[in-house]
Image (tube, rainbow, N blue to C red; front, side, top):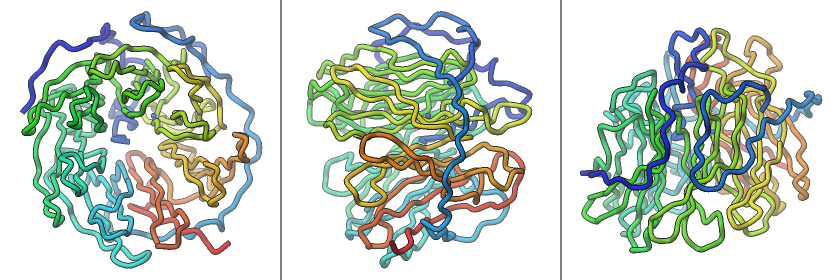
Length: 456
C-alpha cells in the first residue's frame, strides 16, 4: 500500500533518546506516547541539535511559584459516559465530530483495553449510545475525523501503535475507516510495519487536490515524522521529514501565511522540541525548531492549534506534564501549559500560560461564549494521594491573553485526553474526558466522563 522515497531526511540523533527517561520505571516508556493525543532544569544537551533550516533559541523557562488557584467545582456537572467498565480503563484519546451528519455532535474514543475505536452517538440532546466503530485494531491511540475521499461524508483516520508499552519493532500502522455515507465503515490500511504511530492528520501538501497525510511515529529507540503523498487509489509515497524517536503529535496549518499547509510536530523523549516544517506549496519542506527545552525531563505531553489572540494567525498550545517514566511517577515543578504566539512569517514567541501538575491535552475553547478563547487541560500524572490534586483545570482568558487558573475538578484522576463541543444542543460547550490508568493509585476512576455546564 505504501512505498518510500528519500524525501527530506533530517540528521538522526538516535541511540540515547530513552536513557534519561528510564528512571526506574518497570515499563520504561513515557505514557505521552499514547497520544494520537505534547521548563525548568539545567541539564546539558546529550548531543547537538539539528541545524537544518533556521532554529530559534532554545528556552528553559524557570519554574513559577504556585499561586493558590481559584476553585470552581460547580461550573460543570460530571456524568459517566458510555458502557460500564471493569478493571482499569485505558482510554488514550477522545474527540468530537458529527460522524453521521445528523446535526448533533458525537464522540469518538480510543479504548486500548478493547483495541477498538468506539462511537458515542448523540441520539437526542445530551443522550449518547455507545457502539464499536471498529475493533481488532492494534492499540489505537488517536482518531482524526475528515472527509478523506472527499465524497461528502466523514471518514476516520486511526493511528495505531501496535502495542502501547515499549517496543522498538515496526508494529505501527495507520488505518482509514472509510464511510460509505450510511455509517458502514471499511477499514483500509494506509501504512503498516513502521515505528509505532501516534498521530496522523490530512492536508493537501502538494496542491494536487488530493488529501495527503502527516504522520507522527513515536517508535521507541527509533521513530519518525513523515508526510505521505496521496497518489490516488489508496496508494501513497512516503517522505521522511525527521528521524527521531518520541513524536507525539503533528498539526497542520498555514503557519507562515504563504497559503500552503505546514506541519508542526512535537518530539518528546529528551529532545523536548517543537518543529515546524514549512511547505513550499509543492510538497518540499524546510525545517526549523520553534521551541526546545534544555531539561531532558521536561515531559512534553501534547500540542494543539488555535488562534488564541484572534489575530488571524494559527498559534500553538503546548503542555508538558508527563511523569510516567520515573520510579515515583507524578508531578514535577516545571509542569504546565505554554502558548507559542505566531508572530508571522514562521516566527513564534513563547509565553508561559501557567503551572499545572501533570498537564495533558491542552485545548482552546470559548467556554462562556464571550468571543474569547480559554484553555482547558487535564492532569495525567500527579500526587494522587493528595485529595487536592487537580485533575481538570481552566485557564480563563481575560481577552488580553492574561490567564487565571481555576480548578474545575479533583476527580476522576489520571485523565489524559479532553475534547469540547456542543454535546447537549444548548449551544454551550461541554467537555468529554478519557482516563488511562497505567500506575497506582487506582482510585476515583472513570472511563469516559461528560462535563455538562450548569445553568449560568
